[in-house]
Length: 419
Image 1: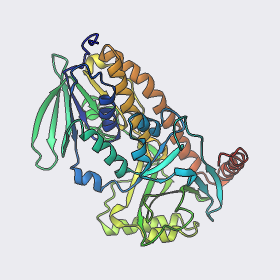
Image 2: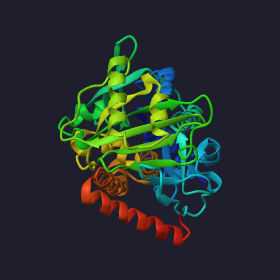
Image 3: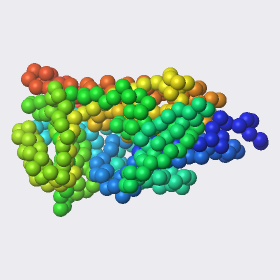
Image 4: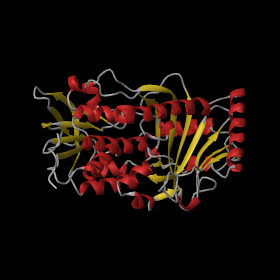
């Protein structure tokens, strides 16, 4: 059968700024959705980091869920990558491990294991980000080349409604321009493309500061954080999160509410690192073992101290004035670590945008349909992350009320067989 018509992107050029979860998901999904009877668009991917640096600084894990069709596991199943992903799961397969909240003396308050959407073997896994990223990079590299160490720093709409993108070599600093018919901005929460085209659309402080790092053990991780992930609710107003990255490595993050964000933190400065670890020990002093040991085993150059930031999502209503540019993932709707859903949003954004582009008759139509899918789930995630910040850092009566609520919730989940 002959193709019914030529698609508006057939033979055109697409630039993707950023080879993170959103950008890679988009390229993989575009290849899967594209009508093979039509000439495909020319796709170029530019990633700021070199491949070695990118993999080297991904020493943490992600929660990828499959409780509904917006989850990352469902998206990976649609991309044909589910089995490869599950093979790298740290926790969550075969009914082992789930999200838990403990008291300061490590008594379990609640344990959550939800029912997966039809077709998936589990509702949630934890996976090292570097492993999931490698699966996506290998998949995308089969269909197009990733230009590592090349950063898209600005974009300008041209008179013919194309886009000129300025690209900087991250090593040499040399610049060059490339033109395209569609620019996909997937360059993260501090998006340079967003800064160039939407300078007033900036990250906002979410009211909490996180400090943490990766602890590396010579042998197995200590219980109960060896087979589960989750956090400890403290009476002092701090919340401490734990998640294994491997059988001998675990990421921890202690957060506190603060009215103002803190300044930059340099994990190459051992004085700053030791100061942060001492502060974490003091803030978490009511937390029993294994927390002191985890602090002791923390690798200095993995430490961090950063303010939680996020931003509201936006729709692409001004496509006619700003040109053919689509923002996906954190470049559109950045979420803080308290959301626990950033990777799922990014993976789904990539799939949905590719699907709508391939199915629609015009870019304007595709962007409208994509926005109708992306914005509501991003808003829901943003709302839930702010609720977690509020509830996880309570003191006094509010702490006891929330603790009682979680205890009752945990009991009900146990009664209904969902814990």
